[in-house]
Amino acid sequence: MHSSFFTGVLLLPSKSVFGTTAEVTLGDNTPVAVIHRKAWSARPKFEIFDAADTTLLATGKATGFLGNHYELVGPRAEPLLSLKFSGWSGPRRATVTLPDGRELTASGNWSARDYTVADSAGNRIAGLVTTSSAWTWKPDSLAFEINAPALTLLQAIGLAQCIRTAVEASRAAAAG
Image 1 (cartoon, rainbow, N blue to C red):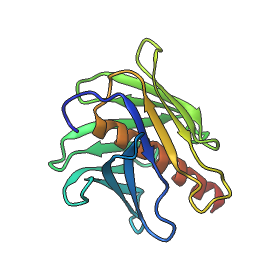
Image 2: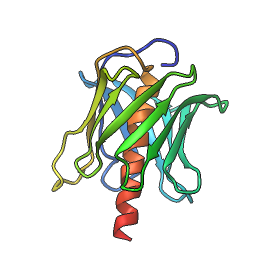
Image 3: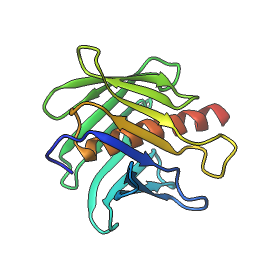
C-alpha cells in the first residue's frame, strides 16, 4: 500500500448506518482497508486500517485554525499527503502536496460530491464521485477512479477520505 502507484477504482461506502466504520474495496469488491471515523474528537479525524482491521496504516485529520487543511500521516507520523483548500466558499479547490514535493490539484463541487484530481500540467489523474442518492441510509458512498499512476493505494484512500471529511465538516458548519 505504501510503495507502488495505484490505478483502478476504489469504492468508499458511507459509514455503517449506526456506526463509524466503513470497508474500502476495489472495483471488484476485494477489501483493501477499513476506515474508522473518530466522531467524538475536537477536529475531524479518521484512521485507515488494513483489510483485516488489525493494523493501523494511516491517520488523517484536520489541522490549522480554519480547518481547511488536512494531513494524512503513517503510523510513525511520516507524512503521506497534505490537502489544503483555498478560499472561503467551502471545499472547492485544493492543493495536494505529496512527500516527494509533487503537487496535485483537486477541484469540485462539495454539495454534489464530485471532484477531479489533476497533476501540475493540468492532466486529469483521478475522479471522485458519489455513487448513492441523497435519500438513502448511506448518502455519501463514493467511487474514486484513479487513471494515472500518481498516488499509492494508501494515499488514494487517504485523499478520498480527506475530501469526504472536509465536505462533512463544511456541511456541519453550514447547518449549525
